[in-house]
Amino acid sequence: MKKSHVVLIRVGSWIKVLSLVIWVDGSGLIAGNDCVTSSMVKDSSSASSSSSLSSPDEESDLQNLLEESDSQIDQFRVSDAAAEQRPTFAVESLRSRLRRSFKLNLTKKQSIVIFLPIVIILIYLSTDFSNYFSVKVPDSVFRSNTLTGRAHESDLQALYLLRKQESDLFSIWNHTLSNLSTIEDVKSAVFRQISLNRQIQNALLSPHKTGNVEIGGSADGYFAGGSCRKIDQKLNGRKTIQWKPRPDKFLFAICLSGQMSNHLICLEKHMFFAALLKRVLVIPSHRFDYHYSRIIDIDRINTCLGRNVVVSFEEFWKKDKNRKKHHHVHINRFICYFSKPEPCYVDKEHITKLKALGITIGGKLDTPWEEDIARPSNKTAEEVESNFRSDDDVIAIGDVFYANVEREWVMQPGGPVAHKCRTLIEPNRLILLTAQRFIQTFLGKNYIALHFRRHGFLKFCNAKNPSCFYPIPQAANCITRLIEKVEAPVIFLSTDAAESETGLLQSLLILNGKTVPLVKRPARDSAEKWDALLYRHGLEGDPQVEAMLDKTICAMSSVFIGASGSTFTEDILRLRKDWGTASECDEYLCANEQPNFVADHE
Image (cartoon, rainbow, N blue to C red; front, side, top):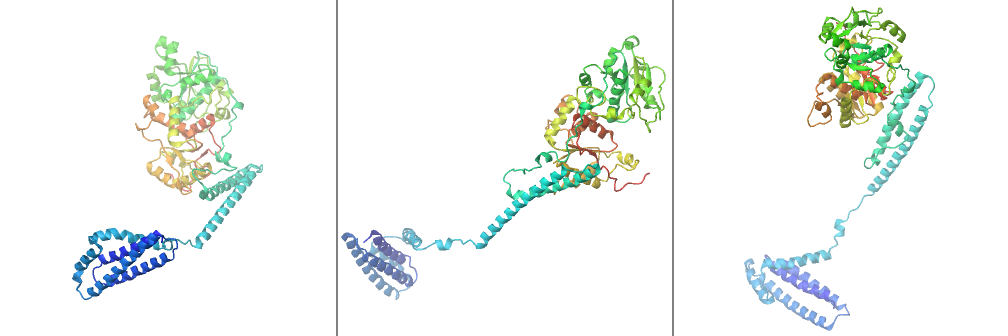
């Protein structure tokens, strides 16, 4: 007989004992357990008889156990019959007899602790738990996975077709008709289709993306700048004049109309006049005009031409031979470019400021021709040379901001004067570096710059026909169209508008469900280091420096949106043209549109 059979028989006996010990009320439990035990013994006996490999010793042990078990069972039956006639409180006598019969001295708790694990093990071995914990997967799951796989296959097929469409659209783009108006219309329509195609590709491919994977395609090179390519300025073919001044002949620049942007444009035209007249240009003093040395790099102009062509007023004061004799600077002739509405824009206040600088003026303010600021006529370089030529050592010409002399020559990239730099008038080095640091901190390479002129612009624009002052919702629509074209993530905002206006504009700039942020220069914060150069050199808080900083940031943008009629915008466009950053998409706000509402005049 196998040892496992013996163990089973012994376990059966111990189960019987455990059942008797934990019995409390009635004999039904004992009787039931008795039947179970007897059955287990019989099963074990039959199993033992079927084994032909049992040893004699094992059979002898088994026989002894069986006899002992039978005698115990007989005793239990007798006890059960007697227990039926006893009250339930006679349990203690039964336990005493059990202890004497089995020579055990176990408490109820001890019996449970010993035999309960055995019962649990037997139940575990005899029960098939797999039926209780098995999970059946419905066929619908597999059908769903199949459908999902087919949907993904269809998505990829659609993506292939869309990319083929994209290739065909670019083929159309490159073979447009020669008619210019038709070309622009076709290009605009084709670009919208390409942009829509791109969005569909992103939507279809998004479930298949893993990590930061970007779409690749035939348009990658084109979309790097959207449809807004940089304009080739063709600097090699520009018309220029050599500026070779006589060292003892000077020209005072008089710029009085408007604000700083007007004065910078006026100063650039004075350079052209000085080159035509072969004179050294004297930059006005900050006590009479703006503090130019804080905004532009004057010494750099001389470096670009390889000779001294400009001097500051302070340097001129030190060199002037008349000052050494008479302790003042004398302007021999003061020539006005415009005669109307008043000569040179110079009034008594400006004359007083000039005298306070130690400047005297010989003779009266005169003008070589009749010229009205409201209707400036086209003048040639030869006319300027003949009418402003003088043998006097020091002459002054003012104000030439509205002068219309060789417009195409003056307005070409790099200006009319021959030099080896990109432009002669540009922000000084500190402002340029600060602008670069701001871009690196807040904007990145691809951004749109917006000059949103509002303060005092309503009355100015409404005096024109058509007006250039647009309601904010209409302006937002114009800007959003350009954002879609450029695909820029952020807009730099240079504005004098109130917070209520910029807040409304920001809330309306939404593309594809996402708000395109407007970024303005923040107030100075010691925790931020992008403007540290201005702070260390004492330039922070200067409104003209901050204005030039805004111009520089706008001039370096991917695309620029300007304000029509603003010289601030015009100076930015000049810088973009000279620096080679001008884009085909540069435009005035809502170009070719009229405001959808215009207020009445006063």
